[in-house]
Length: 370
Ligand SMILES: O=CC(=O)O
Image (cartoon, rainbow, N blue to C red; front, side):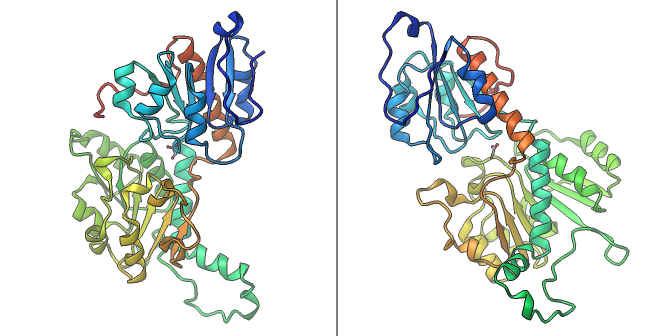
C-alpha cells in the first residue's frame, strides 16, 4: 500500500529495500477522486501536501528529494532550484492545467524531464465561463447582484435604464457585433461556436507574430458559424473594433502587459474586456483607470495579474473595487466533470512518467523557447 503523509512535516527519506523499489511522487494538490489511482498502487509512494491552502515552497523543497514524479498546479513554480532539490530521479512533472508558464521548460529539456498537462478536456468548461463573464460584464451582473445582496431591492426605483449595459446578442435594430480574440486557439474557437448562437457577425483576432496565415481555417470558421468575417488584424485594429475582447493568450514574457493603457485607450467606450487567459497579459492599473474613466464599458476577469504575488487579490484591489468589473478567482475550468477528468489525467500522466512510459498527454516543448 502506498503511504500518504498525514501531516505537512518533512518526510524522512526511506531506506528499506521495499521503499527503494517504489517511485516517490510528491503531490502539491489533492486530486480528490483521482487520488486512489496513485495511493492504491504498491509501486508508488505518495507524499502529499494536505493543507487547504497553496502548497508551501519550503515544504516542497524539503520533501522533493528523491522524487520521481511531481504533481502541481499553475500556482507552483517549478524552476531549477526545485529540480536540483529533487535530484536525478525526477522524470516527470504533471500539472493539472492547460497553462505551463509556471514550469521552466529549459530546465525540463536540460534534465530530460517529461511534462504532462491537461489541454482539450477543459476547453468547453473554460469557453462556458468566458461566455458567462462576457454576459456578466455586459449586463451589469456584478452591480445588480451586489445591489440585491446589500438589501437595496426593497427601495429600488425601477427605471428603464437602471442596470443597463451593452447587449451581447445582435438584434434587428442592432444587427452587427464584433468579437475579438487575443489568443485564437482551441478555447477561442469554442467561445466563437457558443457566440454564433448570439448572432455575432464579425470575428477578429491577433495572430501570433510567427504564425503562418490561416486563410483556409478562417474561411471554414466563417462558413461554419455563418459569420460575415473571420480575419487576423493588428493590435490597434483589435482594440478599436472589438465589442467584446476575449483574452485567451498564454502568459509569459511575450504577452506581459500587452493590454496596457495605450491599447485600452483605443477601445470603444461601449466595449467589454474578458480575461480567461493569464492575469499577466493585462496591466491591472491601466484597466482600472480605463473602467474608472470610461474608456471601456466593463470587464469580466477570471485571472488578475496580482493573483500570483503574496497577498493576492484582496477586496481592496483596484479592479475588485471597480463596479463594472466582475472578478472571479481563477475558476475557468471549475466544472465538476471537467475537474475530475483533469485530475484523472494528471494522475495518469505522472504514473506513466515515473514508470518511464509515454505520457497520455505530454507537453511537446521541443519547439518552445525557454
Ligand atoms: O488556468 C488554468 C489552466 O491553465 O488550466
